[in-house]
Every structure is written in C-alpha cells, then in structure tokens.
Length: 260
Image (cartoon, rainbow, N blue to C red; front, side, top):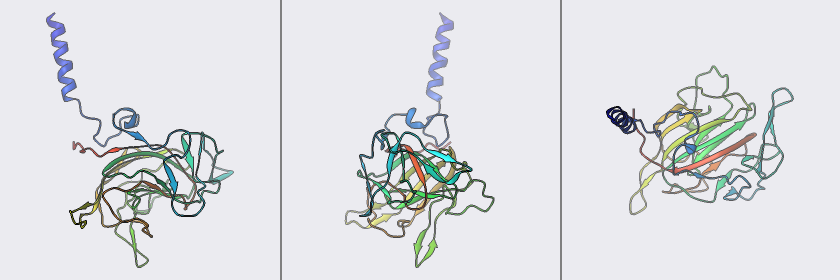
C-alpha cells in the first residue's frame, strides 16, 4: 500500500512540474493537435471564410494533393481543383492575395506552406505585417528580411526600411511542406483612436526553430495599404509572387509565452 501511495505522489508531482506545451519549442506533432482553443481557418472542403483582395479574379482553389517535380517543373506546383484541405494560388501560381472574412486581434497562428523553386509569398498578420515566405533553401548568404521567416521591411520612398532578418536559415527544399508558428500582438490605441503602441511579433518559429523574437513593427509592411492599422484585422496570404500552397491553418487568441 505504501508503495502505491509513493507512486501516486510521484506522478502528482510530475504532473505539477511538467512544462507547459506553449513554450515556443517543437513538440513533435503541431500544437493544434495537442492543445485546446485552436480554430481551423480551412474547412477541408472549399474556400468558405476567405475572399480575394481587390476586384481582380480570384484563382485560388482547394485540392487534395500538390505535386512538385524537381526535374520537369521545379518552378511550378501542380494540383487538380477538388474539395480538400489544401489550397493553391491558381494554375499559374499568380493571383490575388487571399484574405479571411473574419478579423482577429492578438493571435497565435499556425500554418503549413509549400513553395516551388524560387517562389515567394507572405503571411500577413492583420493583413498588414508580413512574415516572408521565400525559397531560401541552401542559401549561404547572410539572411535578410527578404528571406523565409523574415519580418518583411516597409517600403518608404521606394526604399526598404526596417524589417528583421531571421536568426537562422530554417528553410526546407522546394516541394516540401514547411511550417510557421507565430505569436503576434496587434497595435494599441487609446480611447480617441490614437495609436499608443506598435504591433509586435513576439515570436516566430520556422519548422519548429525560433527565427524571430520580440520584433516591433512600426506600421504595415505592405507596399499599398488598403486597410488601416486597427485593434482587429484579417489574416492575408500573398498570392501574386509565385506558386505557393497552404494547409493546416489554425488560429487562437494569444496567450502569454512561457519563458524558459
């Protein structure tokens, strides 16, 4: 009897001291499978809940599988339109940006993406502040804000200003699924609507590796701002810079990050 009491006490102590999963480290399977509170932004069937940005034709479509061919078509992604949980930015890999119907405030976002060789996209929190998606695989150059996992710079007088290079090159090969997990705090405003604090990327993981920590963003990173900074805004995915596919897009309200 005493033996079982000791074992139970040990298990209780272990449960009390076990670290929380929400610590910014990779834990095998994605956290949306391990923790509560995540909301899917793709329904596994169609693009309900999303719309194209602007008046141009929206060629994004859902599919069940994406093909990339290293020798025959390294700069293309190929898929057949069908109900499914993956989406591709059109047959040519260039179409309008895709925007959520719903708006979000402070958020934690998880998603997976695939790009073709030399391709380029971006994940915009609040539709304004971009985490760069880019084919940086194998690059030996110094990382810049234009590389994958970078906080993209602002364009002022046709010059790149600010931004934050990723702390490492975590890119996988073209044609492989990659992941971002992003902790984002939106800008703050007082009662009169005056901005009192800039937006901030608290942390960005690229393929489970930390590439950004506590990066302030002074204004949107889009070249043309069709929406103003606000307490809540949509998520946007860039669709006009080359073939890109997305899947497993999940979001939840921001929780405090546990420092280790």
